[in-house]
Image (cartoon, rainbow, N blue to C red; front, side, top):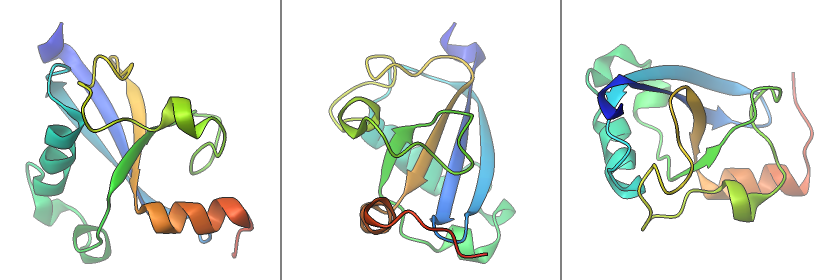
Length: 118
């Protein structure tokens, strides 16, 4: 089953401006650690396929995402934030899971004042 796993990653550049890019990864190994997956996303199969603002941004962590949220859910951090020592499987990632990749500082600021600027 591992080779058939598809995970969508939301690269969140700005919560306030709802600026994100979706990247789909096919054939993932759910037994890799969260740290390995972070490095895999950073390196990317083809990093040039991302626009420069997304390619050069210093992302730092993942959260499982509820698909009914435009950028991501702000609730249940203790359940949703993937822990570095876990495998993706242990963290609850399954086929067609959607996760966000973002900077913790940006997330904390947005969570404290969740207003959008259009």
